[in-house]
Image 1 (cartoon, one colour):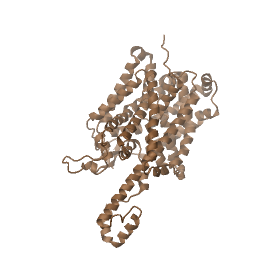
Image 2 (cartoon, one colour):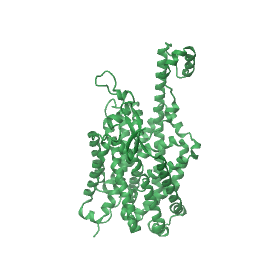
Image 3 (cartoon, one colour):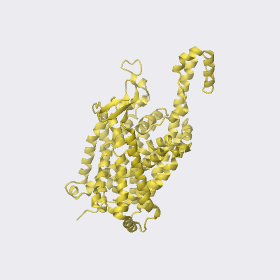
Image 4 (cartoon, helix red, strand yellow):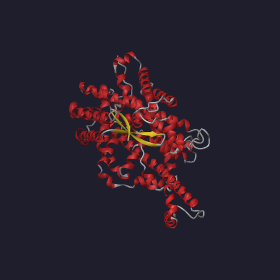
Length: 559
């Protein structure tokens, strides 16, 4: 006799699990960057349109498939058609690739969290050199936050060719991250269902604290004005719409099999239509909310750097031209520059290379995403706050909750099909299966803790899942609408929900969403071909700047 399928304790637990999975690091470090690059507040127009025509329908589709078939991705698609089990296998493989490198972010978050209890913060200033006569040369040429990230955290090598050794501190943090994930998934929905209440809600608590603090920071308004000022001309840029579509797609975690796995533990009559809309709206609202927090912090950082730059210029000119203290201010700086240029042309010309061009707009225009935003820009802002240790602890706890919440979904996508397998489940308890999956991922993940590990992280992050996920979801929509049959799927929904899907869902599933996904696939393939030789960013410790390295099948070369 088969054991009954485990169930969530209540529908709210399922919603929390989906929110914990969908609301991840991309909401904090990717969406604000896209707003910055593609029209500020104007980016919300294509973003919300893509939510309606792509995000909600595809999320509803995956939840309905998982809930009705009551199987993980492999079993669910095999029921739809024996020839489609490969779609489920592809989802498991992609989730495995993602899990291999994604938990490294949690390892970095643990590393920063442990260092957040130091006073002062270790990235607040540059360390002294071996002679204790001056600052470390590499750090002095850049910033203390960049130095802590590239040298103290990653100990990064000059190129991907120079693998270096495993950094034991990062390896220990990675093992800890996997141990935490294992404990969270140990007993399946029984343990995961309890954890998601924390991983889904705690980030909002921290974001609210940061919002209150951020809005009181000097210069925060500059960041918010920058964000909400729409650049309508960007709506004519095709990349704006492409990026809006891809952000919705990947933010909801479509195609990995995680949503199918979560939905398979629902009661058969659960209202997955309503839950799809709730999760979609909360996910997008969180992105906008996180952007408000990010841009208030960003405005503070930009204003701080701008005013610091002005102070250095004022001090330089005051000392060189022996001006009276207070004669030169930020308000009259430009007019005084003109006066000094006309009065002391030769002396000013010699000094000109040392005079920085300070611009608040330029500081705000500096677009950063990913680990650069999470571990450098935020660290830079936090170190200048009062009670910086407290805000640092809160921030990296939030990153951990977001990262662990996403990992619960990633591992569910792998484990649910494995535990559904009669062969495996009869020979091994699910605790052992979970342990084996976590152990393999952890061992492979040690590659990312090597000195060249961050380069491999970027390659996996850029290429491991993007195109494959689009193809997986394209096949899913075609399979449901044209292989399984839309009318048959309608009857299934009628049995589950008590009503058939309305015209909006059917049009999106059958026509709009597939066409949109095909357009995205064509764009990515075209962009890949036009890009030609791939490049990656490398840290040059001698010059202390980020170098572009060309990557081709014959080797690597600087460019």
